[in-house]
Image (tube, rainbow, N blue to C red):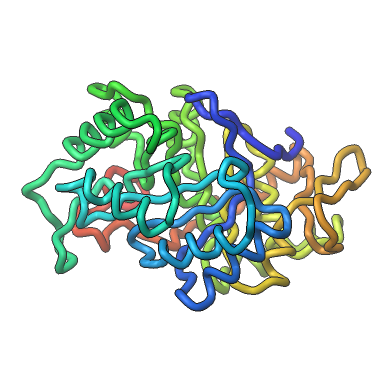
Length: 312
């Protein structure tokens, strides 16, 4: 399918396909990256309490001058805050200096203590129930809620009792980690997928993969653009490239190649999202058959593989 510019959530809200991710974006850099991105075409910013940069992201949003209603803003509930989501939500709103969130995600189904250990005395499902309560009671603060890093096994447990179907599941997605089972399940349930680490990781081997570089040469773009385009070409999919440098932010924004004609949302010759052919999408998908890896293995949480088949 052609690359999309937005997707519609199960709430009816419109979410821009490409957003600026801010994981590993440090204070002192991230505020400038957010400001620059919003001044140059981005309308979607993704952060998290666990990134410890919400205050700076909020500063960048303010500095951009973009009206709040034109921005789609996502943040996430941190693992050590799962016992008190209400206070965590208020803290995120204050740090981001915003009256509401377009999307609030449970970052991991993995409650943790303040010293970084697994909190196995608390059930993440109870946290979700509180998130539902907040969403239903405060539509002025929360426009949508969702999850992140959820396997099919964990989604099935959640949906068995959920009053609110998650609007989004944000997971690692790239040619070496396509997670077909999660993709298929979420599509059937009307849950949009957001792809993080679409390049695979920093200095990813995918950037030098023969299939990726061949397609990049065909379209006259960088390998990173091909990997981001792969996600933008999928239905019910959004994607989060990340950078703190102006040039790289521009190189990962929108120029859609449609029927071999280009139009640009701003000026940058390298800023391309390409319409991949069905054959190219299959080629990229097949990379996983011989080069599978995850950039972010869930074992760090202390809860093992959290239901992902390749992590057992």
